[in-house]
Amino acid sequence: MFLIFQRLWQVNWAEQWQYRANLLMYLLYWLVSPIIYLAVWTSIANANGDVKGFTANDFITYYMVLLIVDQATSNIVIHTFGYKIQDGTLSGELIKPIHPMLTNALVNNVAFKALTIMGLIPVWIILFFLFKPDFSGVALSGILIAIPAMILGFLISYLISATITALAFWTTRVYSIHEFYFALILLFSGQFVPLTLMPPIIQNIAQYLPFQLFIYYPIQLILGKLSVDQIIQGYVMAGIWLVVSFLLFTWVWRAGVKRFSAVGA
Image 1 (tube, rainbow, N blue to C red):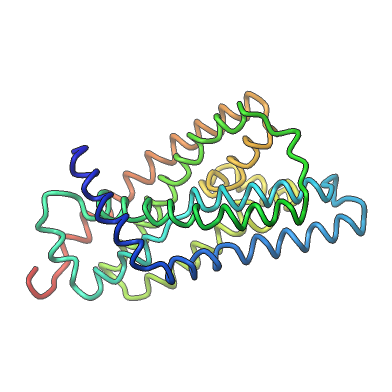
Image 2 (cartoon, helix red, strand yellow):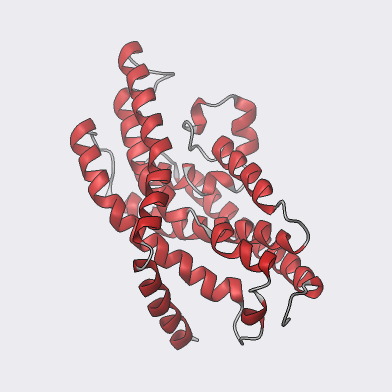
């Protein structure tokens, strides 16, 4: 199995380099919103002194870390796999002795992610010198604890997106469904604004949903804002959602493949 993933990595890594312009467009798409949020909230905090206890530096460090975490936990499976179900090209992958979405599509996402992070680094450095954040509160231990959380966040994010992508077996509106899902991420993940600044009802709902595991939870780990109990609770929730998302994906995928039909299938 290791050799299979190694070969898939080599192929997908080489493929990603063939679409550098496409990669640049995706990177710009991901960068625009967080940078706008960073500039807006920093300006508001500077004008008012703080926003419910959040200083300008708090917003700067939050969104600077968010840029990295968002790249690490996001995925593009809906864009790289959804069309295969709709145009029938999935047929050729179903006859292979590997799962199409849990092998090749997954490795493709990881290869894409590796290149976008490489592209993000120089942008992040420029922003660092522009906004001059104070990361004195960030410790190596927090970063090390956050790495497994980001991996779990990516896997959960990928499996949920893969589940929505698999709905293409039933409907051509799968992209619209995914856009609604993305809106939920924006609301409950802490991407738009730190969850502690959201209304209490949003915060209460968010702690039981997987979306905060994509962005807010890893950011708080890196910034050292969580107690030991909160860290443990977050990892327990991540473990639960990983199992739930995997089981849900498996059920939807198997049911979808049974009804799939295409030329050559």
